[in-house]
Length: 192
Image (tube, rainbow, N blue to C red):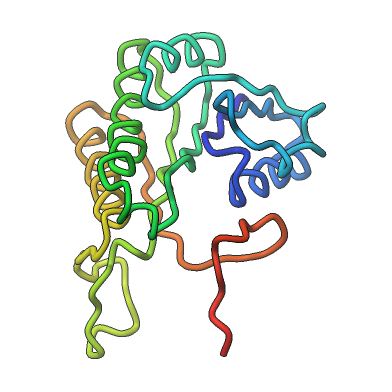
């Protein structure tokens, strides 16, 4: 089995790669990186994974990568995920997150591949939550409050649409705050 992780150099991606390698040693792990990706989170894994260079905003590079890797699973974790940056660069955030995902989907369809694709959403998609709506459920309304959150809602809905329209095997998840070793310093945890 072959797995492609977008965002492998990030916090969640590096831990997922580590988990797959430790618990499923028969799986070939490929990681999509950009030429400027910081690799400190995966330096301990580099002799166990295959890194492939490309960009979600470049469908040609994605097609080349997917044609070689032919993944059975794709964990799509790559994103511009820092909410304050999304306020400063909303178009770039949407381009990386939503348009990048469309490029990934279109490359998969163009090549006739049929991987299972996990789309990493965010609790930010829920946005405005009223007291009587707590605890949040998967069925809670999506009321995004930042450009980042809007881009993640777009990713969620695009995954649903590509499943219904083209049969793409997507799984949409909405992760809540998580932390641990290798978490970027720009992200903070509440201190209660």
